[in-house]
Length: 116
Length: 111
Image (cartoon, rainbow over all chains, first blue to last red; front, side, top):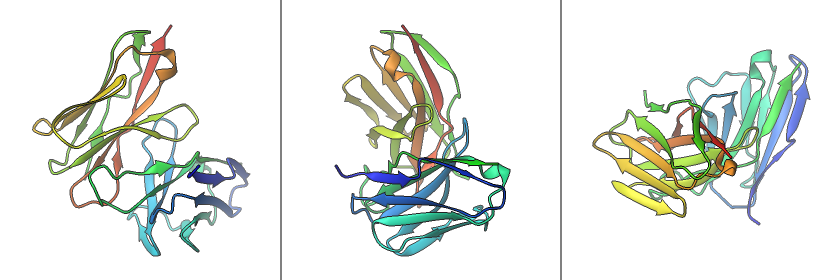
């Protein structure tokens, strides 16, 4: 089945210790997104890739970086995690932005990050 | 600032009742509207989309859109305890290529 896969599902890291979260997709979608979601809050878009073009949201901290080495994979790097970065990190994909009115995003299962 | 507003709830309904979830949006030029369901600790799952004024039905779910009032709703008929989740409204504002999400409404369906 075509899908969006995130690894690991749970990640525990120490304050200030770099961490990398992984997302892969078998949908062959052009766009991959990273969201941060904290309890009882809306998903917050961090950045997205349209093919190899990187689009950073204006309020995404520099502490967050991303890499997309190929169509299938995208990584989220948190260079120095703080306690406030504990959240669910969601990867999503879409065929292309706004190709058609019904085009939307499909989410992976998420990675829950805990910072000690 | 493109905003999507939802009542955080919880909205409590008995099993078998109709649950009505509401969403308003600030950008009058928005064209596409989506409802996602999110179970606790899980990722959002798409359940409906709508882009024309009026109603769109899919099984027990009906999405309603009123662009003049900048209002979109989701009705769930014959609510089941398994419908208990947070429902996120998402909108494509005009000129934007990414979705704007509301904070979601928690729905609790009691047996």
